[in-house]
Length: 287
Image (cartoon, rainbow, N blue to C red; front, side):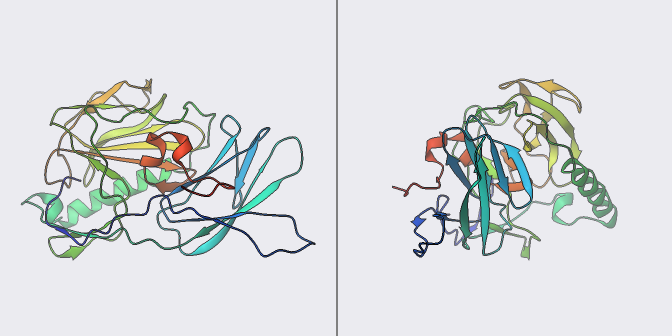
């Protein structure tokens, strides 16, 4: 969100990835470990890869590559991941270490979202329930390739992913799950890939919002639009206009809040907007 009064924002180490060699044992198979942070993405590319798994979730590889998203709320832990084709499984480990994305003080103007009434909070509860239903959708086949297209034109540098927000002196219940893009008011908001609009409506805190299912568990999210050009159920193509940049909902000025949720993990959208070769990779030491 386009906010002022920034306090101690600590630059995020978005690509914390160093290859760590496991202790040598003649009885063990080499299983590499890569270090990452909450809200990031790890890739594992190898010829012949068809399937990927993480925790109890299995999904198809994208053009021979496995992508493992780490949810922003993940605590310190080591996650075992796997990939395989027609042969045996290969395993690796993602060591998730904490990362401080910083804190922002936000002064909201005199809008309902600054001091929500009981009725406003009931309305937001309905919003939360509808969103919870979205995340239960069955994954369809992927309708995208990486990198994704730009969500707004002209495109600015995304900011504030993962920061802890303090609104008018009161701490938000959770960190900022998306990135803010500052473009002129009225700039077209664009679908980043083909997909189906699974929700398009005004929400209390998010304002005019659009959610698109791109298959393979990937959902893109667009908040604070001044107007909506699509409806729930619409099928869109990459680059289609979804609406216009605005400042509806909890916002201090016109901007786009853009987020992605992949395999139920909220990650910095930057990873999907840049060339995949920049994503930290298992078996490769970061430059």
